Amino acid sequence: MRTKLTFVICGWVVCLSAGCTHMFESRVVQAFAESVKAHDVARLKTETSAEFEEKAVKGDNTFRALSMLDLPEGLPKVVSVKPIKDEESKKVVAKRVVATIGKEKKKIVFRLSQDEKTGRWVVDDLFLSREDYEENRSVATRLSVLLALNESLDAWKAGNRDAILAVATVEFRESLAHLTPAQLAQFAKKCTSEMADETRILPDPRIGEETSELRVSKSQGELILKFRRDGIHWRLDDLALESRRSGEDIASARQVAGAMSAALTFDSAYRSADKRTLQQVCARPFFDGCLASADLRLVRLPEAAPGLEGFDVKLEENTATFVVPAGGEVLKISMTRQKQEELHAAPRFLVDEVTIYDLSSTQDKRLSSLFTAHATMENFAAALANRKIELLKTNATHDFNQRVWNKTREADFDGLPMTGSAPGKPRIVQTRFQGSLTEILVEQGETPLTYVLREETGRMLVDDVLAPAPGWPESMKLTAEILLPVLNFTRSLADWGVSHLDRELEAVRASASADFSKFAWNHLDVLTDLEPSPVTFFKAPLSAISIAGDRADIVFGSSRHGARFSIVKESGAFKIDDVTLVAGPLEDEQIALKRTIRMQLARGDGR
Image (tube, rainbow, N blue to C red; front, side, top):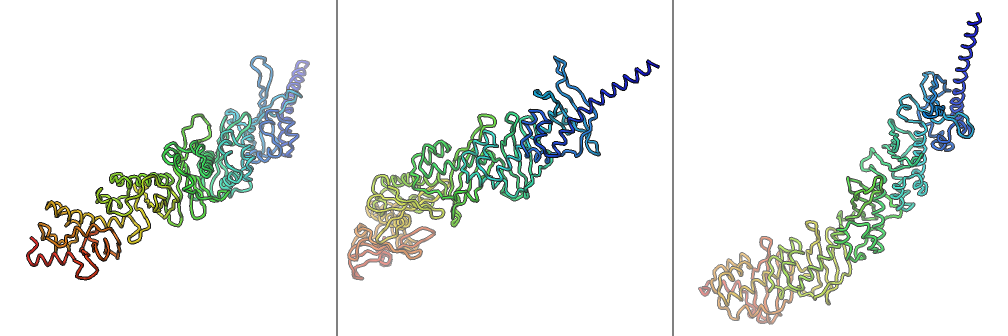
């Protein structure tokens, strides 16, 4: 009897002891649950460890973050307790408590630790499943990330520069810091517009030991926020926007900010002609080949609104394009991302092209081409002054070459007006854009000239030179195109009269119209004896050129002595249709060669 009673008593004591132990852990976890339910920050701090508090307790924001977790409702009921001992001292340093919550009895794992100051047992962390416990996916870590999420979203939604920089990693902050408050606010608005007041995290968040990524719902897409651990806290390292509206995606805010920083630094340095800064922010070929020796005042960049309203940054592999509207123009700055030397380093972009898009003419004007145009113009002017035909061809358009320079000999320069430009480098007065053309106004000698350049095969080439002229077109291309057959005709006619060579006769025929050759030059083997000789009339200076459609009249000399050439266009080229030798103002003092030679041939005097 005594033995049985003792057993019963001992058994009762053991049961009572175990019950008391579970009651003790139940009190701890239930106190924690009650503080969460009541949104009692002070009590929550009392019932949690210092590490949990530092990680996850930040005033009312903690409960805001907790509401985003899928926590079961109800008070936890402890079902098991496992002491965790130090391997050396064998002292209990923590406890793993498994509790069930709610009607579905969902199992939650609590980790309890002893407060160093008070000696009380408190909640050090909790896990929403046994799997989470085994893989160390703790609620404290999740709360820490969610707190960082809410802080980041609040800062970006408000567009406050200081707040945005405060929640960012050092590297992300470095990319953003170059933007002015207005520019950063505009960028933040672009990223967070149309977000609901209540943040809704999409399924499958990725929370790791060092990095985390959460997707937040937007009305027309998703915002992806990427965090990196900084000690026990988390900071925003990047964000991206996936939009259901075409063209609104942002692949990486960090890269966009880096590209914007480079573009805006370029814009500021260009406007102040700060070439030292431009050299730092531009790719070397672009700076050395375009900007280093250029007069930046000659090409004005469009002025965007202070807040960069309507700006866009496009990312594609290792390139970025910053686009901002500016009145009737659009400024486009193209950049290339440089190789990243350190992990997590802020992206660095270098400007390699700038384009001004004219909305009225739908033409792109590349800065490299425009400043190359100045160099091309100077090369062309030097070649013109030194009569270097091959160099002229190199710097002229295909059309200019086809119509003029491919047909020009060095001897022709004396007969072409405007080709005798003054030596020396032209002084650029103004650069104007006319659609696909660029006009450069220069002072070169006493006559102001306008070089007209057109982009061709990626280069700006001279397409014409304009100069005020008293009696002929201001266009060098048109004037030379009309005069070249005359110069070739008169030179070949003079040489034929001396050499009697067939090649000179062929040159005369090549310069004449089909009708002129039919009635004159095709029937001649030697120069007909004409009195007076035509050659003497051709030495008079150019007086006038008049054009009417595909016909033109060229006058050399005066009404008393000179020559008149009737020009007609055949198969796209100007030809001489007749020549009138002028010996005086009277009609019988003027000799039309076509009629005169035809009459001589009719009399049999031509051979």
